[in-house]
Image (tube, rainbow, N blue to C red; front, side):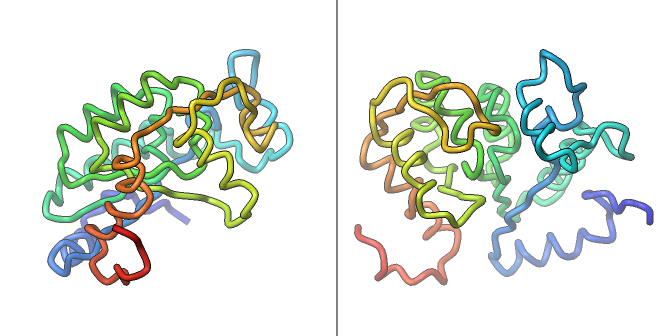
Length: 207
């Protein structure tokens, strides 16, 4: 069938009603840009695409940039609706760009599911970003596997150096801990979510 654009005006009432009711929208558009790029020596996700060929999007009816632009158009059209842009909005490798988007659109938040490796390989830039936007970033996770959480905690909390990601095909580079302050960690782990989603039982979380 024909693809429905993310910013199709027929969906506008849904986004608007979410804003009216105070319901934040977790939105996932596109995938890593490398899934659209040629599979060659310059594509750092080549091994993932080789082992998971169905993740390849080259030649599909919408480019990566088209999907991202449609999503940002929705954010701009609905400034009274809170959006959680999944996976750092696929700008984990361009935190300057992501920061500019957050500055422009105060209704947009983001989360770190499946992109912790992008933060861990640029620890100084990532730490500065996480501190500056500590009120706009949430903890996120694509998989429920308990053993994978250690990698996230190690990147966010420690100052460890040169350690591997938990999936070799996903990120073959080494990472470094950001050593974020406790007050920032608490916001990322749960305080920002409590503000966005008032129905969460606050008694389950420490101050």
